[in-house]
Length: 222
Image (cartoon, rainbow, N blue to C red):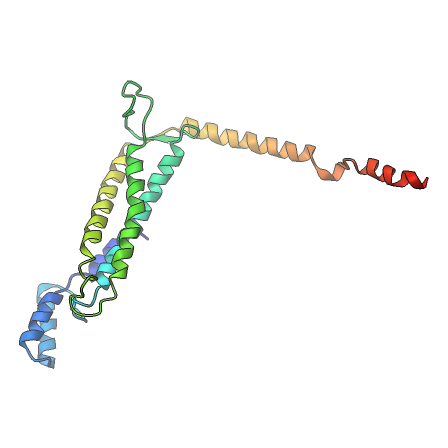
């Protein structure tokens, strides 16, 4: 699920690729140098890198994927609140008074849900930049390497802010069971009316102008 992605992603990220590059630069690429890398990783409790970090950009792409999934999950919560909080639905509302009419305590704008929904729509586009930067053609690739950091920072900021705002939203969400019951009763009434309408307009008992048309067609030959 989207909520389990951060844990799985974080477990694969910690390594010391930069240190590995330094080790290889001062030691010959022999088994002893590789053993030194593995021993150093185990000592620090880090993951042993399989490839140099300069061209291995998949960890950043993993973060991008996790952030995009998390933003989608948060955005879904916001979308549900926005739909259920519409005046014609009125089943939930945020614990905020109206910003435009502070004297009307019964009117609440879905401020938090709107902020979350806005953030959720931006993160996938930022993640696409990080995915496009995976194709590294060299160590410290010009352009691709440098294009990662601004969208990565922005995606982290948006998802972090959306997560905190979602916690506030759900912590103060007002639910109206009475309105939910009214809406369900209205659905039952609408279904009953639809059933009645179908019975009245059943085409099996309605011929329309068929009889008149048949008579008109036969009249010249009578």
